[in-house]
Length: 142
Image (cartoon, rainbow, N blue to C red; front, side, top):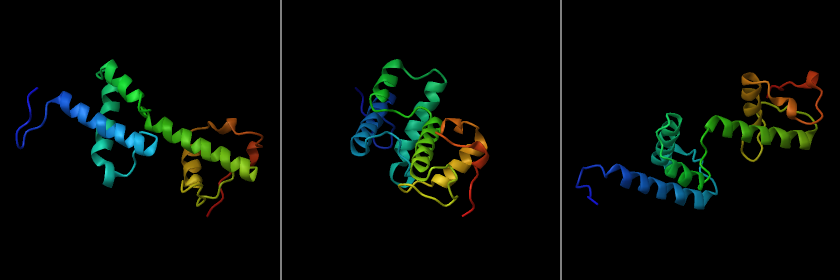
């Protein structure tokens, strides 16, 4: 295997294995593969975005897809964000009995009010929330 000299990029396979190892360490440390801190994990975030692009174009090898799946790769950031927001909305309803989350409300550090507002504006998928009279669904201002 050829090594990269000073100032040269390593071969693509070596680069992929290196970043996969970085992803594996992140997964071990955090229990997921969804880094959000661009100051600490910019290279990993960029690499994961590239893998999402490649799979979307049908260009990511099945073996690599399998390796990333083993690390719980988040293939759709939008679906993942929706799932997180939905889980927080359900927790709010369980705790307060309604989905009228104040805009500034936070649950476990997550901006639940802002998240619900964005999701309600973007989709009408909230009918699965339990026992809610939909005429009462509103967002309180902060």
